[in-house]
Image (cartoon, rainbow, N blue to C red):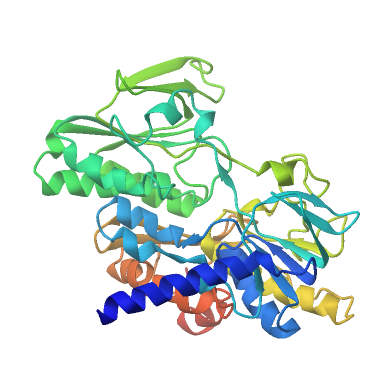
Length: 441
């Protein structure tokens, strides 16, 4: 009875929060943050405290916030889906105004954001942290077959649980894993699930019956040579076939057939190859949201056009951006967003306080924890600007390590909920000074 009453009261509070999030919202704010994902909340949590209650608005249409780095573990059967999400009402900072609508347009000339219902919100300063859009429609036949016919994707909360379900159904045949040609978030995830599938098949005693193929539209298994060498070695040791310059262009669910276009400049470039499958994990192509791409704040590729060091817009000085929707030329990861948020907040506060010098610079730091099995993980840390490793610990992080697994699977999720979303985690730079002071690796 008590639990039922508590649940009813909690539901009522959440409903009231949703109602109040927009019904009484003013139309003008000191700062508007477009996006309530990891990047947006890392910024809005700190700045809403600095600027005061009611001075910051967060525009975010989703009523559920997902910790997306955990999706690979869910797809591999190592984590429960319930651990990946919380109501948005519980993670938006209390000092900020949550506007639970989607942004439809940004006009930097009038300093306004138009919402999905046509209403406008004005700002003095704007931070765009809207993420990137999954484009399941970018592959012929995929929208019709995703979530059935053995086709799944760890990139969507709607389909991530199907990954483990369909993997358990495999008895033999081809298991295919794909990586598209477009920029994507968490570029290591497409291959991580292949390693977990290999481990699962071995545990069931059916590995000899299954051929695992990883198809990437890129010319390398990983962008940074040190980790590319490590992942090629892992794939070889697991008997996983790596197919470069192969871009998934069509899925025939009824026939269980995947078709790839050969990219690059080789003799087969431009040809298509069809492969039968028993299981298919698809990383969908991704693209900027239309409201950004079609606005004046976008670059030619559709991403928010910002300075790669200060994160300030290249044409509109009162606009900043970070995370997956930004033009920053580094891998799009939560680790990158954490480091970017620290830089952005300091520079924006300097500007708000009339200090015209944006003194803090982002160095392109990002991280991709490449889980290769239960209690095994390659912890890739590097600068996307230079391609150089930028490791936090004294040991060689290109080696599979149980500590790296524990850090990623158990510690970082706690840091995510308790620190990053609250604006107090800006990456491991301070830890690196102690754990790897001489950057020996």
